[in-house]
Length: 135
Image: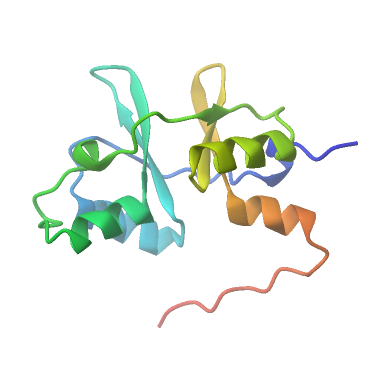
């Protein structure tokens, strides 16, 4: 039986608004030790994703993280998964799209995020080692 996205996804989903600054998003992501935030825009009913890479690209371009907003850096052309996708389907979508996170939707609601790390963890026989908690 193939493993499914629902078996690998993280159900701890950080949701932020489009007006959150990149610094606010980075602080929230760092506190939860996650690499992405789901950006919910209630005015447009849109769902996007902001990743650590998006923040890094902005900083590398010399932009001010206290002025730049999530909305301006949300990854375009988001691909969504469903909980019943296989991990193979999720991995294929990530490779095809060149990204490392998929928002998992159930009935158009975000219920999780699956990352490349989640998929590798499920495919690997190596036990998960807890990351050190910063002081």
